[in-house]
Length: 210
Image (cartoon, rainbow, N blue to C red; front, side, top):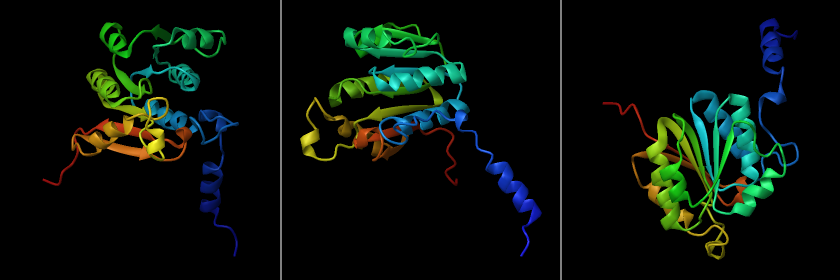
């Protein structure tokens, strides 16, 4: 049976791949922060606004690149001065659209003059429920209605991972959000070091069938 001309045209159109369009690490692919990079790219493609990151490290590389790609500002905060300064020794770690802050996250949210709107907020600072809940509540006050919050360490493999040096008690906030009808939340078990990456959005303008 000969090829269907229109199906061949469609296939050729779809399969003309351009990997440069997606922010994907060749070395880590879906592991570590590969998934976050893809999801954040999706968010920024559809949502206007800037980026906030609480907890600086490898993720900052992705957010710096995404800020450049989508012409957004990225606000990076970490409590540890040494972490920020070590990252700054690599010129590409933070870019011209990045601003860095070294202070407790409560102070960061309270005193930073953010440029609105805010499309995406990533929270990976303190791993205890009490502080991450504060960070989440502070983030909600800044987030635009169709923006997203990402939480890390929300699905520890077992109880041995619930100490402060590992995932801590962030999972308690994930359970709290899951039980709250005001939010949509999905937690990815794999990638993000396989300890849980939760994607959260406040429910707005949802069709209820009424």
